Image (cartoon, rainbow, N blue to C red; front, side):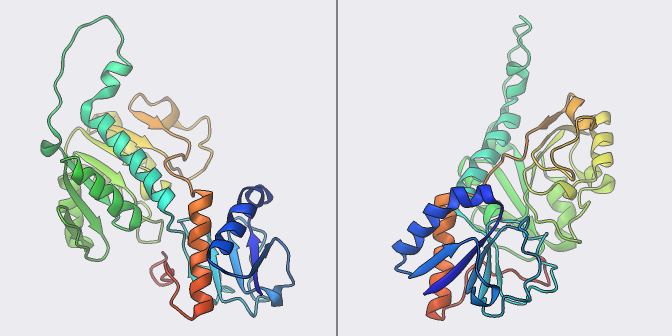
Length: 309
């Protein structure tokens, strides 16, 4: 019998109990999944970083901690976590992110706000460029960033991507490292941020780097709030150097009502809805990693502690 501890908020257990049990059954795993065990009896922990479980020392039998979130910045530095940590790479989340990113890139590319928000009675035709003439840069080429880059490439956009390490995606100009960062930003008519939050990425988009972007560029951030220096972005928006920013993630969430982003005419705030872990598909990902652990196979999506993701 495999003992799987579900360590997340109670409302998540209501959502996940049946899908997880179904996923384990479909994987032919004889598993007990529940919210309480004696720590020394636990084989795997299905985990959300806002769980009450913060000290992993008592879980002496645990083979892996299986994160329900794509982001691991709130758990990766935990010194008591000595067993493998696997991040969530969920096909449902990936599809949701592709849809959200493509939707907002197309919105900015076509200038849709001009008509949606401009029902003034003035007949002012405008013709956007074709996708092939619009340069989109994706910052971050992990699972989500790569999927978005491929989706935008398939729509005909001139797509580049930037990552810390070298990547290779057919039909996408892949740049990396410090030497590729300025090139990536300098050609970004529309910039999509899908980097993890690490010490190296915090405030990556600061005043100097915003100035590298073309005048009138647009920013779409469904990644992490701290990637952007908020004061620098507001200044660039106020001068018109950045034409618009669509922001889904913030340093403090919910975004405080007094924050200047809410009232800024060239900022769109969305309430961290770009994509969410899907219960059914993420349960299947968890079950597959448990199957691997029991079969002695390598886990998938293991976090690189030194890189922070």
